[in-house]
Image 1 (cartoon, rainbow over the protein chains, first blue to last red):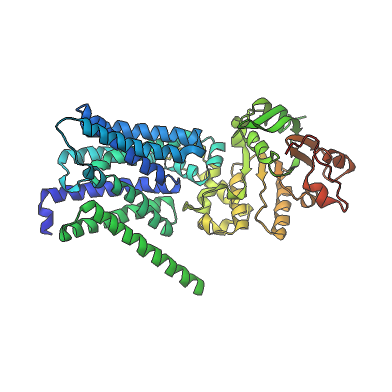
Image 2 (cartoon, rainbow over the protein chains, first blue to last red):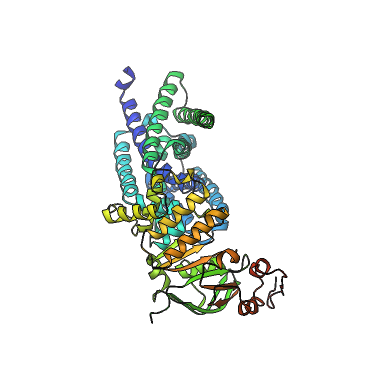
Length: 272
Length: 255
């Protein structure tokens, strides 16, 4: 427990908990609406915002905020207007956002930001003020998710039927992608965009196998996130490895175990 | 006399420039039990979606229960084609049925006791109450279909639109299903898309043939009249219904 005496470790844990909660909720919406690829696109395109922030001398968070919301809106509009081309549009935004970020950072004189820290984050260097911003964004994301829980559920289950009830499916879809964008803003500097994608896709895929309702799926997801983040952080400390990557591999191992457990369960039900 | 349940006048609809429906004019009287038949790609589902307000006509006029379709949609019970819903979503049968009364996307208005009672009633009517806690993904095709029907009934609709509801149901349950619909027809106008007219014809009151154009027949059986109409509409009804199939190709059939 002496680990926890370090302030940076306390901050890392607090950031981990916030990431677990936000990704647990949004990850479930991402899975049931099948927008993992879009989430990946938004997360990567956000790097363009880092570049814009640097070249204009603005705080990177502001650039990321503008850029990830913008790419979320473009992707939402594209998937509503040109569904058959959405794959290409996501791919293009994904790559060009990153490229723009890298070139703008190149062009910024006298400053060199580490691309790796945006890919894998730097959870061990989270400051108190970072935490406050994270907390604010987390409350915002969770609040909106809770308010529109029912609409998201209906949209995910049967979009067309939801429309016949008068549920504003198009607007909810925009909101969903903006919530993904906000989660990216909240987490990219802390846990990195690779870990965001991992936390948005792996735990929900596990929770889906065992949960009986969307609400329980979210709770299970948050729990799994906490387990993976805590285990990953401890392992990275003990083995002196990159924290983000260790958390991801822990989650991957968890996914593998869940697969085995599920097929084992299924066999037992068949035999019974 | 009450206004017709559905009135369509000179309706045109094209999808990406390809005409799907052309100059459609017919009306469905209140209390009707209408079967919509026609070849695949003939525009049956498009017609249903126009009635629901999910699609807008390019030209012409459609009114449902005397209203614009999207205004009337809440009074319509809609049973979509089987593959319509997301099987990966963990959601209970009871919640799915409640979605039929979910007229707001916000969660702060909890479902009222009325909503829950209506859902219970609808589930009991389709004999699925004991499955209320099950996940929809774990149900068989026939059970899912009954849940979809309960979801359509839970809002006490004046009009029921069913799009090939029996596609994945075995014949014995189909008969049960149609018997049930006949009962429902005492309170609601029913429009059903199907392909097996021989089964349908003993239940419905009228038939509409859809193949880009719509031919409405206010007769329940395969009559000489209908056969004449069918000359304009080469669909399965003739092949299934008669020993010697007379199937002249549609004059305007370009493809």
